[in-house]
Length: 119
Image 1 (tube, helix red, strand yellow):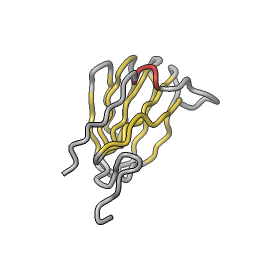
Image 2 (cartoon, helix red, strand yellow):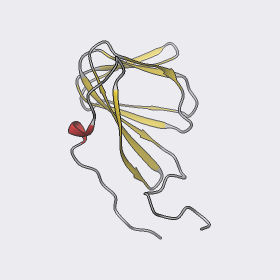
Image 3 (cartoon, rainbow, N blue to C red):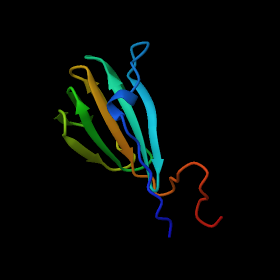
Image 4 (cartoon, rainbow, N blue to C red):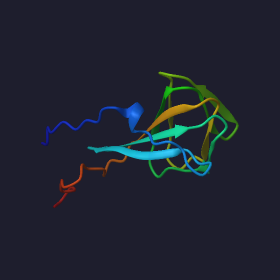
C-alpha cells in the first residue's frame, strides 16, 4: 500500500488571473484518486455548461459564485462546498471576484511518475 502524502499549498495564489473573458484555471494537484483544479473568476464571468467524467466536490475559497445544475442553483461563499455526480451538466458564475476549487474524484488518478494499477 502506498502511504505517500501529496500536498499543495498557496491555493488562493495558485489560481491564475482570468484572461480573454474566461476564468483562470490551473491544475494544483494530482493525488491518489483525485485531481484538484483551481479557478479564478472575475465578477460576471461564466464557466459555460459542461459535464465532468467523474463526481466532483467544489468549494469556494474567496468571493462568491453561483453553481448551477439544471434548475438547482446554490450560492457558494468562502468555506461553502457542493458535490455533484458524474456527467451532470453544470455551470459556474462569478457573482463577485472569486477563487473556486474543484476536486475531481477520479479513482484512476495517480501522482505523476507513479504506476497505475497492474503495472
